[in-house]
Length: 104
Image (tube, rainbow, N blue to C red; front, side):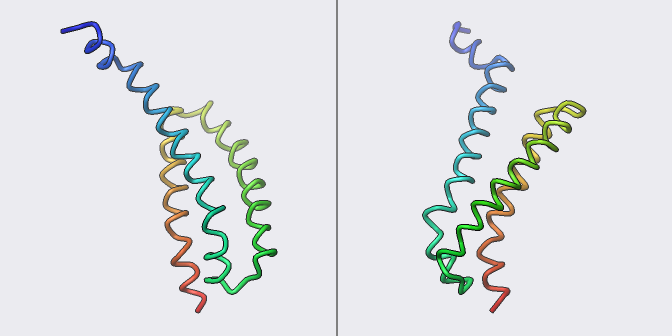
């Protein structure tokens, strides 16, 4: 087996690649709100100016989530905490369109 193949199969490399993928997906989760804001405002029948509160609530939630997540990361297996948090965040982002439809 070549040096490159051995390097790619090492658990440390795969773990690092997983962390990079997690940060990339987290960025996508955070970035999805901006371009979809006008459509989301139309679906929820809210004024676009009032939708700015979403950014405030998101920042507050991110701060509280970081505090709680840091505690959990120290007490439990860190990878499991990060993976679970990302799956929950992805699920909540997927729920946004259904929430708008449920209010009709």
